[in-house]
Length: 136
Image 1 (cartoon, rainbow, N blue to C red):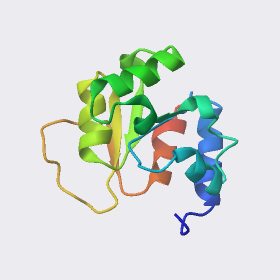
Image 2: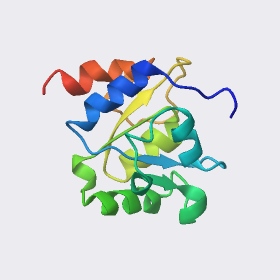
Image 3: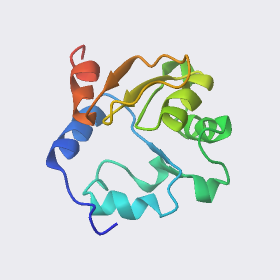
Image 4: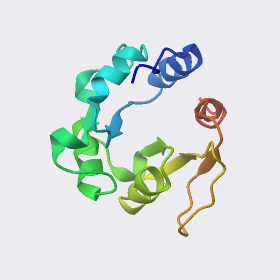
């Protein structure tokens, strides 16, 4: 985790998104994601109650229950929720199966392994600015 640092483009994007959307994190990471958030300079964007850690919840993505726990915390329905991530199985298939939309961050240009269809595929997370903020 020593190589994790601050990326001002990501911080700027997330701060913009936060003015229009409720943001949260669902992580399967074996480490405490709160430490990573702090190291990335994102603790102003993500409070502790918006970070859902599989190790603490006893559920791991793509188990539908972990997505339900996050949705319940935000008081949201799956139909009005967008999940963004880089894992086809955990961040696209799992959320779509749970009734959400997804954006796949596919930096390695991998092929889809199922018939699921995200609303967008981007090669870099900063590309979601055009998708999510152009209509606001």
